Amino acid sequence: MIIMSRGRQQGTKNIPMPDHLREKVEHQAQAVEASLKVKGSVDLGGRAYQRELGNKDDAYRRLKTLKGIIRKDDDSREYSESERSEMWRQADQLRNEFREGMPSKAAMHPAHVNLATQKTYIDEGTVSLTVPRNLSWLKKNDKKTLEFKRLMRVLAPDRPELANIEFHRPQGPQTSKAVVLNGGAKHV
Image (tube, rainbow, N blue to C red; front, side, top):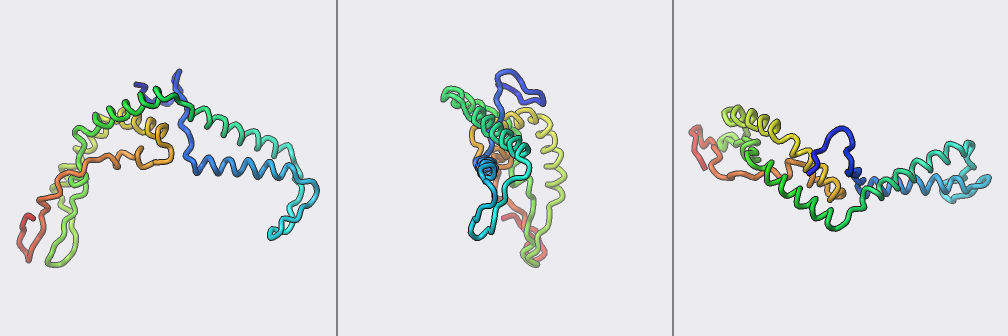
């Protein structure tokens, strides 16, 4: 398992771009190539006229940069099936490890409804217990969550929700929410 750090480690690859960003870069590269091919003015129909570039050196540099980005993204997408299956195994293992002791969604969102007034309120007692618990959990699992995010960005670049730790937070018990009924507290 490779823990992510600020410096690039030997044997690691860059994270691939999501498809929508890659398409944007490819579209920009095609636009620069097309503008380099224009000789004089060309009628583009609804866009009136496209004029020849004044400074082609900047366009060539921009095209080289864009093609370099695409080539780098191609390299970051090339993983063998065995590497990918090992990465999925690591991601699953990390997910199981960091979910231990993770406060549930029910505990993190202690909102209740006063049925008499139909207004929501926050249970301050639950918040005062859950916030320090979540902060200690974050501190304890920081490296595991960062590595998990890196793996998910490599394995599923088009599903950013999978790299979001909140997506993997357990639901928790959905019962025993305190609700105030006609001025008296009752558990539902």
